[in-house]
Length: 399
Image (cartoon, rainbow, N blue to C red; front, top):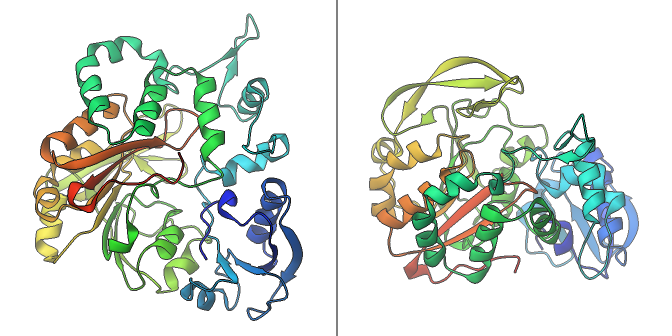
């Protein structure tokens, strides 16, 4: 059994955690709040311990856990990858908000409390004169009314072209919704699923191009979702050099093969200068006060990389390139039209990305079904899913 998020965990079963590590202890704390009727019976270091209904495996650094992860279909074992390193995930949110959640049929939180929590972590600020909470103009598209107005025809085209009503609703929240609407959507979704893993039919994905890695928090989820033996080509200027200690055992498990390609994706071959943030991540997005000096990295188009590699098929392309996403797509047109992969594309780094990238995909891939969801309580982490029409309509994990 696979659980991507706490509300995918069975509500009324007893369970033990394999290994008492920092990760498993915090996961149990989260489950204790959002799944209060599930009975926790303690930790065990024995992979064969079945005294509880379910044995939870979340940390592959624990001895024996990788073998259980390979047998992902066992009914009495829950493989539970964690989004460690994703600042917008339920994992990070729970570190400061867990005790404030109102748990019922749906998770909820008072808007004032939500704003207070965001203030405590620096996501909102207080006006020095009035003391009122002030949102950053860059955090919500509702502050970009003039820019949205200039592009209303393209935006209306995108709304009409989206594949379900849920995507149209989410897109409208992103464009015009007040912060409270973003917060409500976040609470409705965050503990149910994670970024990149909606709408895609992973059973079809044997060859994957994964553009943008850094800490690699999505890699454990690829291990649990992709067919065993699938190959994932990880493309990032920094390669695997910044994978977190949590992610590394998942990569080393060899359940899925991860292949490192240390270069940048761009619209042409050559080199590209990219700024490096103090946390070590490279980004074309300017972050004043945080960005270090620019460095040069080798760059290739996806079309060139794919042609040289001689792929028989490409089933999924995921891109999160810290602002280089639009250029990477320009350099991938032949790949997209030839192989017709499923797509999970970041469209949030620059404001125009919210309509430019969907419009680009609609024009070069007119017979695709498009969907949108966002995975933060601001405008960030917005993903465009594009599914070839011949695969049928995609399906969201969260209505």
